[in-house]
Length: 294
Image 1 (cartoon, one colour):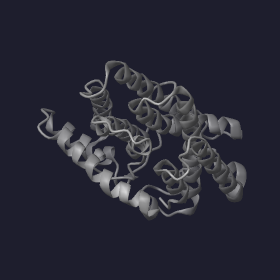
Image 2: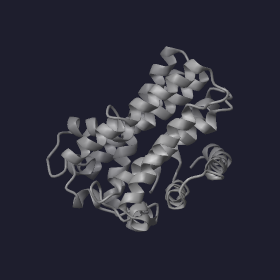
Image 3: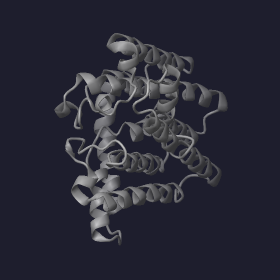
Image 4: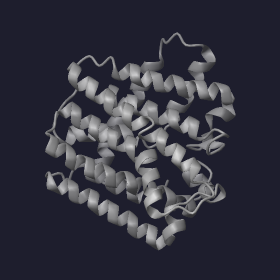
């Protein structure tokens, strides 16, 4: 990890963690629901998605008093999706981020409701921005709704489940991951860019970056699933193989998947070069995504 990125993460992750602590303090939720919601949000993780929102603003040298709230809202959506993803009716995993999954600790019904509550809390947060003009707030709400719904993450999850036990083509596999993983990652960058009020031409280039880095993220996940241990990953290794899912290593071999990863990484960085962000935080996050070991 570069010193530039380490410094950024050391500064921003505590701000995000403090934001979540304040978000849950004083809430009049049923106790078990409160515990289940906080359990998954406070489980740690890389915080890549909220960091992307904040990195866009820092790279573009734009300050927004609502940035942490927007970034935090998207992390709430990501967290809800992980709780659902781990359920027995979906990917059926007992561990997440090195800890027992939400349904293992609180039971399936409470886990489902905690995830539902995190999703609705996210939209409450996005609808109550205090320092953002209404048009921008609505644009962010629309972008997050599309990215996390049937046209994005949820649709991708359905395609992923339907693909189990089938030999998918590379095009079909990319279609799944553009939606399941890539849509919300791309939305982080778009949300930051909306707060920064970038031009449409710059927005399109940032979307190109986000599309390639989103696919790179998933390819790296697929590679780690077969090369890293459960202890390294914080979740069950070789899970995709056991679930008979098509993955990049299964379709292309490890060397082919690594080559595909590097190609998407290069195209992502090339896009940033077009707008003078070749040495930006976004570029360093891109490096981190493809070089991580968990």
